[in-house]
Image (cartoon, rainbow, N blue to C red; front, side, top):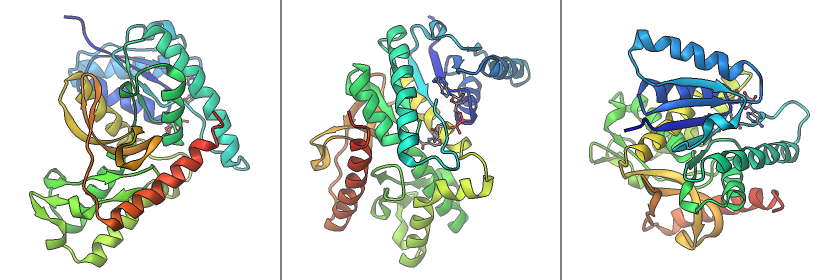
Length: 309
Ligand SMILES: NC(=O)c1ccc[n+]([C@@H]2O[C@H](COP(=O)([O-])OP(=O)(O)OC[C@H]3O[C@@H](n4cnc5c(N)ncnc54)[C@H](O)[C@@H]3O)[C@@H](O)[C@H]2O)c1
């Protein structure tokens, strides 16, 4: 049986680290693509040279040519430019829009059966753009954000309670940004509701830190943004798909009436398996939670409208 093929577009911090996790987990052979000559080749060769030490059998190649991505099973898209001083949010959107349109077209031409995992920001808009432009069924274009946001939330809870991260189950809805909707009501520690272990004020503080989790890392790093947790999250999605695990994970997907939302890409719990998004899970929300979802959806709709497509 042939090895599975994972292509990663953008060999920057997130892309190269995703390649690292994927190769080490032996999820398949990895192809790293970037526009900069030498970067994907150098990082791929360096990573492959780690394989005799770490003992993984994944081929890792780097290229500036999409032909090497042909017949990929999963393609993770991280290509884009970060916001630089003096660049407006609209300028950034316009630049990343052009990059994503061109990348998606080249990827789909060579791998029409692939499942695309979007990472480039602004995430909800870039996922929407790719759903609209790629011609792929909506089940096969999935944005990564919810797993990262949930992972941060779980990490903060584990730190607060001094318990294993493995014992925390949590779920989160909404757009990627400060208006994400963490759901303490659906958070348990080995089945014990979070509200029995922490007072409301502490939970509120952890939720607030989660909302601002991306900014916290940016402020610490000074240049660049988070990449370990984001790349791990993209690889968890890749693994769920390639191993047909049917995991229930929060992902950014195209909604057509679910949660009362239409024609939007939004973070909701989905079942991820070999077909991509195999179902969307609709939670019974309280009025308060619904209001937060509505607020988050409004901000995502605004960002999508700025795409002008
Ligand atoms: N969804 C999330 O939760 C999340 C989390 C972290 C980062 N991100 C986003 O992921 C993206 C990548 O972040 P990073 O830290 O790796 O940035 P980075 O600058 O380190 O890497 C981006 C790479 O994309 C490449 N690139 C640019 N245009 C390209 C093109 N047309 N074709 C191929 N490659 C191209 C660049 O050369 C660069 O190597 C950013 O948009 C960032 O905001 C999203």
